[in-house]
Length: 231
Image (tube, rainbow, N blue to C red; front, top):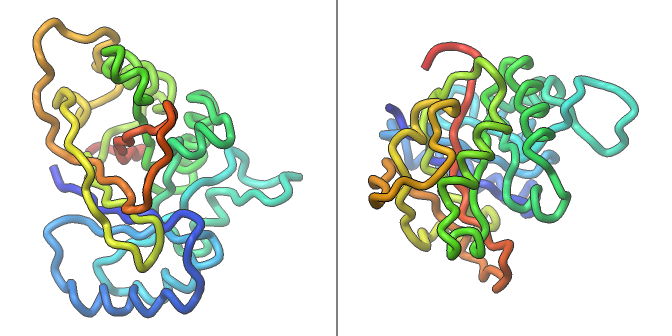
């Protein structure tokens, strides 16, 4: 199963930061995994133009569930595809915490992304309090069951290297241990923790190098890419 190294620039970066993208493309000709950068929406078209013909994919950080309509300030999946995006991050912990996004909303967005011919990166993750209570598998299993569209196929298990901005180093903070079935499909995800320790997962979620607030909403995110076709 091919891995995906994804960098999320979050709300950082201007056109001046595109010089780093050119340097990345020049330095990495044949990567051992799929590469993806998700800049702010203002940079998607420019970055996609720079990345054309290279191994670098360009993605978006969110989208609206509708293809069009009276939704001021929102961007639809077809719009992002037109701008040059190939992937869309959905259900990130910051979207769930700061904007109150639910699994139902994430699922609707994922359906829109897949319908537009893009790859949906569905993020799931427990809070620190839920982890400390031993509810990791139950929480993530519930999120997968409710966030993944019916009939979607797991394209790859991704290994995202998230960064707080175009110039910030991607520094892994910790490993997490989850069952290997994360790489398969949502319907087989266990709803309750097993009595034995979970097997090591085949991927690592990296944290931004920016200091994180010491709150119970500090989530460690896993991402699985989903598409409409077979893996």
